[in-house]
Each structure stands twice: as structure tokens, then as C-alpha cells.
Amino acid sequence: MRKLVLFMHVSMDGYASDSNGGLDWIPYNEELEKYAEEVVAEVGSPVYGRTTYRMMESYWPTVLDDPNASRHGMEHAKWLQDVKKIVISGSMDIVEWNNTMLIKDNIAEEIKALKEQPGKNLVIFGSPGAAKTLLELGLIDEFLLTICPVILGGGKSAFHRDGEKIRLKLLSSRTLKSGIIAARYELEK
Image 1 (cartoon, rainbow, N blue to C red):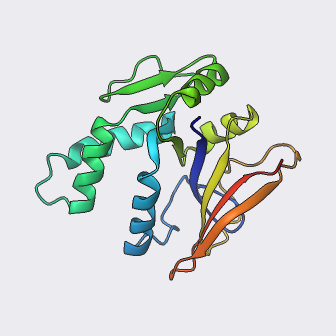
Image 2: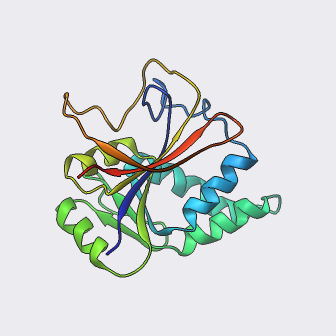
């Protein structure tokens, strides 16, 4: 059975974006890029919320036509073009990006059915709104967090749940030279 894994960059105080929706606080460099490549190697299908999906859809297909694209960028763009993508949105009616499945209703049932299919894991990339919904539905099996050495003091979080505690068990961690802590957790049973 496949797992649903949340892969998210977060600040030390748990935010996935700053108060303006920005991500420029993430110290993205070659080392983090290599780590992200390791994560992508585990992915059977990327899962996005509406906002992240639209951002990805507007950017990555253009890389395929960019003669100046990096090797990494081109490989990732080709992978995204071909992989089965999943977008969770109650407000979208259609998706146009190649090989994309829209889950609009019956989210729990649809995700459970996808988890029962053979293959690599389903991985939520960022998408704090969708991640919060999936967390509330009890569907996330693992949390793969890159905890960045910054305190934002506000922004958007996938974890604020009206005081309900969710206990996690650390499976692995490593520290990158930039000070990012890459940690993998599962729900504590």
C-alpha cells in the first residue's frame, strides 16, 4: 500500500509561506536541490492544492521549450510532464495540464483508493491548504519537512488545527550545510 507523504519547507515557527505568500526565505541551493531530487525519486504521483498546481502548471511546461534550462530543470520538467499529477480543489472544474487528475469531492475516498494502488508514494508538495485538509481527514502517513533556519512570525501553515495535538515519531533526520534540518516523521501510534 502506498503512503501519502507531505513534503514541505517550513520555517522554525511552522509556516510554509510568509504573510505575503512568499518563499524567498528558503535557502535553496545545490545541496537542497539534490535532497529534493532524492525525494522526487520516491514519488509515484505528486499531489497539489489549487494554488501550487496553478503555479507549477504555469512554469514547468515552459522549461521544456527553454534552450537555457539547466539539466536539473529539464529533467524535472520532463518528469512532471509525464507523471500522473493529482490536484485537490473544491473550486476548480477542469485541469488541463497533461496527465492530471482532479479530486473535487469525496477526497478521503479518492485518496484511499489511490493509496491502495501499486507503485511509489503519493507526495504532497507544499500546498498548505490541501495539506491541512488531508491532515484533518487523517490521510497523511508521513511528514517530510525541511525546517529552515528562519522565524517568519506569521504566514500560512498547514498545521494550525484549533489546539488539537498530533504526535509524531522521528524516523530520520539530517542537517544540511545551510542549516536546514531535513526530518522525516510518521504519526505516533
